[in-house]
Image (cartoon, rainbow over all chains, first blue to last red; front, side, top):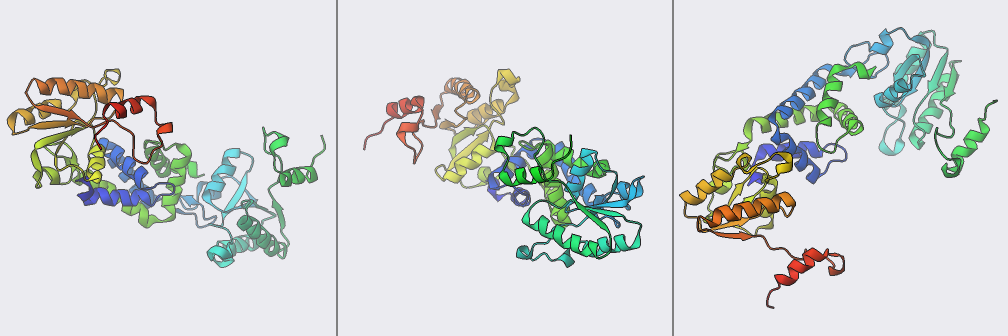
Length: 197
Length: 197
């Protein structure tokens, strides 16, 4: 019986730890990998390489292969810092190609419910960066969730005492959407933030 | 930019090869793994261990850690062979706890459309097992798909010339299902195969 193969059981157990992957999917993935031992080896090697090479940038705390990361060491506007929760958020902003300053990755958001306090995030390091350098503006790009908004409020209070300009990403109606189906809170924000033609 | 981290790009590429996993899911999984380097290492190790240890049983061709596999070397009825397409099918039958004979894993099904001919499957080895041993019955448990049925028909013809009893898993109404919603072909089979109370 295959159930008796400990190495397969172990692989299924490891795959099950991944988000959105249950017992059945884990088994399906394991069998898929077993069908091509080459892919299996490649995946294992890729994992080890990532484990070996990826670390946090010591300036902005994003995940990177080189420290400082290509953004911090690149030709970017050092007077603006965009604060995000995760490296994924940073990537989304980079994809938009609308920002040419630096970043600061908090590595989470304040969430007393989950026991995450300001001290658990990279907020101290952000305040140090702001006081140390020639930073003129901090753009708070935490998520628009309860945790993200709490973090944004906390940061804005801390930063304003340092005399820094603090801004937040604009709320509004997403591109390509039908106003009829947009929630009314978003419509309210869009109305309040309306621009001259 | 994280997009510039080659090891991450490589990991995402490897994850994308898995069934049902696209670019976004692969990224999500990669970041999840990056959050806990320990899990990352464990997964890589589990993959390597599986690659190292899992092989095909030389008798029944199921995936196993030991050759012959625990079923072939166990205390099973050697006079009955149940033919399945894959090791997963074997596992499903074992889970049902309704069978105590041996298995033979074809490693696929005849599918001219995908270029899979009888020679690409473990049919020759099955016929050898049947002629060589004291096999009395072959239960054909290929899937009830076009490919599976084709394979079943092919096998039954080959095996009957050897004077072996060939049977097929019963069609019928699945347990716990409402007859109203069962497709009519299945109902027809269930009616034809009705049993005495």
